[in-house]
Amino acid sequence: MLFKNKRVIVVATQSELMNEHYYRRLWLAARNLSIPRRGWLDEIASCFCDFRGNIIYRSGEPYPIPLADDVFGDDPDMRWLSYYLNADESGTVPRTISRKIERLQLIDLYFRINHPNLASHFGK
Image (tube, rainbow, N blue to C red; front, side):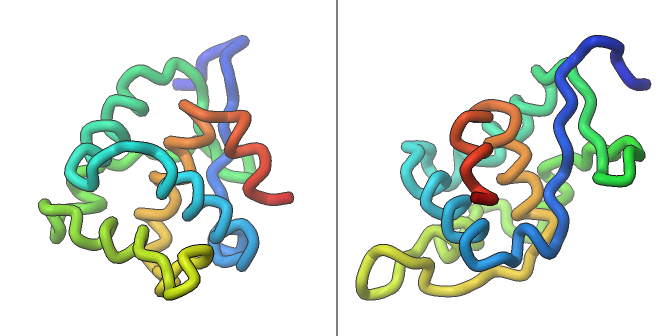
């Protein structure tokens, strides 16, 4: 059900998330938050539980919010997040580029909902 007069959040597309600059800014923002890797699952789940707006795809269709446990289900220790947050030798760019789009979308949505001022700069 869509709520009227509520915040509308648009889910990032795969091409946005894989854009070098967008990916790096999302990575930096996640890296700079002081959330332990195992705490991210609870943070993401709480973010969606507390949000009283609409989350949609670019097409306008409602985004079916997945359970964070399902998206990260094969990684209960959140080791993937540790690998995702690792920097290269310079410390300024990610060591690897993840292709786990659904996981990246949830992290991106976390920022769009809880830190919209930061998220507004990801695509610039």
